[in-house]
Amino acid sequence: VARQSTGPVIRAERSYVMIKPDGVQRGLVGEIITRFERKGFQLKGLKLFQTPEDLAKEHYKDLASKPFYGKLVDYIISGPVVAMIWEGDGVVASARKLIGATNPLAAEPGTIRGDFAVEVGRNVVHGSDSPENGEREIGLWFEETEVVEWTRDMTPWLKE
Ligand code: UDP
Ligand code: MG
Image (cartoon, rainbow, N blue to C red):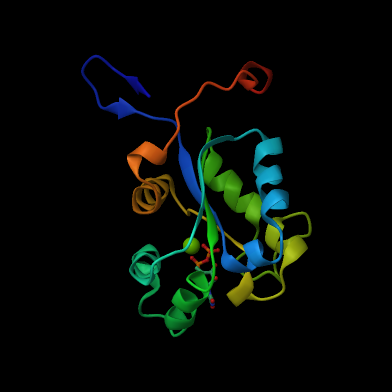
């Protein structure tokens, strides 16, 4: 985190990425983490977590009026999730590309949903849709003490 002498805190872009209960149950945790790791983003937080219902509702509150909201909340609390923070320039949009379209049948092969899912209600993974929502979601899912600041020695081999 860099602080200008007078201005606000400038921090690197972060995305909240979550392996949903179907991804955990299907044994896709390693596969999904590998895709973000090998792309070159930096892992800043990681936990296996049983989601309380109120947190699932808050996370998806913008969808509360949708007919599928109740089933969506039930899905997200149906088993443990893997909650992650990935950091890097452009990570929010890039993570969405790695994840693929919301409907897995429309998702391109090579994306996570394109390779591993067939239904919108079992689409394996979540990624924040804007940097602002990334920060909002990280604040919902992680305590400050669970966010790990570390220097990755590989960074000079990824960024000039
Ligand atoms: N969803 C669903 N039915 C729909 C649309 C969405 O069950 O018709 C679920 C799906 O799990 C999706 C989540 O609601 O990932 C959030 O929807 P959003 O439009 O934000 O898609 P995402 O950002 O996950 O691609
Ligand atoms: Mg979304």
